[in-house]
Length: 412
Image 1: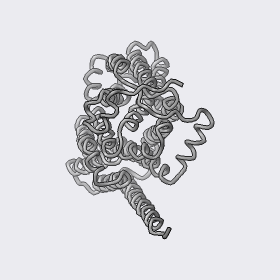
Image 2: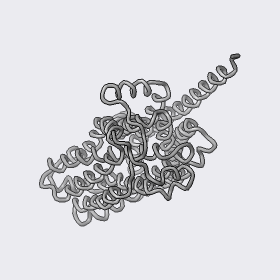
Image 3: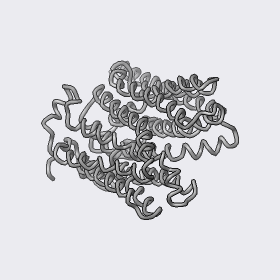
Image 4: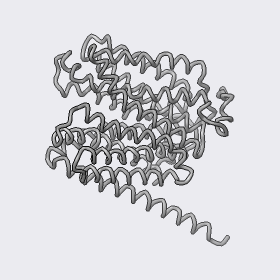
């Protein structure tokens, strides 16, 4: 078997500034493309509906088909990244993502658009998986947190700004925003030349790979981490992205632009805190950061419930966004620590599946419940859930530390 090549900068990346690494630059650029998937095209949904004379429900499939493929196919993509290499999967997904997304601008029918979205969503899952896996391979400790934090900051910045770009381009036609996908082609070409395959073990194939992955990922730590990833997205997409806009429009008569501004300010807080995740990781473990993040979710959700003005709700969303910046990079860092490099792609692909599951289920679940309970009870209930998760993670880590200390104190 051919030994994987190693970038000349790999050893330097662990001791010098990671921002000098071509790998990091390519990863961050690839991550910046990810919000092209949904945030960019969200403003085009009404125009898309009108162009093809379809219903709102049919138009919403533009989003759901994109995420469903990631839920199902992410584990297989992760296995592929562990077997054939991260570089091959990322480069291939960049080209497929760009070409399938750009082709939508010329799609002749509604069915063709959905088919291209399925292809693009699959490629996007590959980009999500390989970017965080490359970071996990190349860095360790607080430096890994720093790069993962910056990666999440780039993702949040794109999610905050791309709706504005999509709305501006949609003024020229529902399909014009999709031309932005072609920006991924030069990045793919750059990655072909400059992205080196990181040195990592090639784990067992087929059934043996799956058995080892299941054994490693069946413990309490894995359950907590994957549960945290799913619940983060479930609460975010259910309360903040779906329910909050309805509340702001119904109770305060806010326009779409002002609602977008509230959400963008929350995303800005996530960007700032994510970028400093490496600094926080010097003083707190990844599990403590996750617990602190969920505590911030609880404060933000309770704050939105108690607030009596849009300004108060905006401040609550700042706290909520800070929680995202604390917890999301820490989840990926902790999962990377949990497994060997030969299983890292598979482990992070499962995180991607749980993430996409939360994103797909949150809007439908919370909108259905709100039809019966109203908006405010959902914020209270979600805050209680977030606080409960934070306390549970703190308690679990305290229990594990106590067990370790008792073992260390036993006489030989």
